[in-house]
Image (cartoon, rainbow, N blue to C red; front, side, top):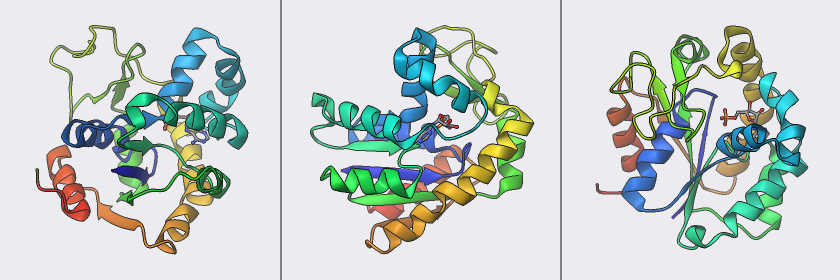
Length: 212
Ligand code: AMP
C-alpha cells in the first residue's frame, strides 16, 4: 500500500500516519520529521532548511525531492509507505511521478482553519523522536514527557499563532491544488476530521476499504 496523506498543517496527518503504519505494517515518512532531525544534527540539508521551516515557508522543491527519493529507496519501503507532508506542491507531485513512484490512494483530511488554529497552540512535539501530542486531546502519560523515548516535549517554533496563520496560507495556495491533481488521476479520497483520533482513523480505514 502506497499512500499520501494530505491536509492542512495540524490536521492530524502525523498521528494518523503512525496509526496506519502500525495497522498496515508500512513506514510513515514525514519530510517535516526528516528536516527537523537534519536541523538538529546541523547537516547541510538542515542548515538549508532551517530558515524556511522556522518561518512556516516551504523548503525548496529540489531539497525535498532529494530527501524523499533517498528515503523511498530504503529497504523498509519495499512493500509500501505512507507519505505525510509530502508532496506539498504540484512540482513535488510531478517529480514523484517522473521518478516512477505511483500511489494506491491519496487521502485528504478536511478540517477548518479555525479548528487548526485552536489545535496548534496545544500541540507538543518530541525533539528526539518526532512523536506529537496535544495537551488536551492526546496528552502524554506524564505531562511534558515523551511516552516513547522519555525526552522533554517542546512547542515547535512554527506552531506559534503567527506562523500557523502563514502556514495555513501556504497550504491553501501551494498544497491544496494537489487535490485536483490527484482527483484527475482517480486517487483522491476526502475524509472529514472527526471529534476524536479514533473516529478519524475509522473514516480513513473505511475510505481505504481496510477492515481493521
Ligand atoms: P510538517 O511537520 O509536515 O508540518 O513540516 C514542517 C515544515 O517543514 C513545513 O512548514 C516546511 O517548512 C517544511 N516542509 C516539510 N515538508 C515539506 C515539503 N514537502 N515541501 C516543502 N517544505 C516542507
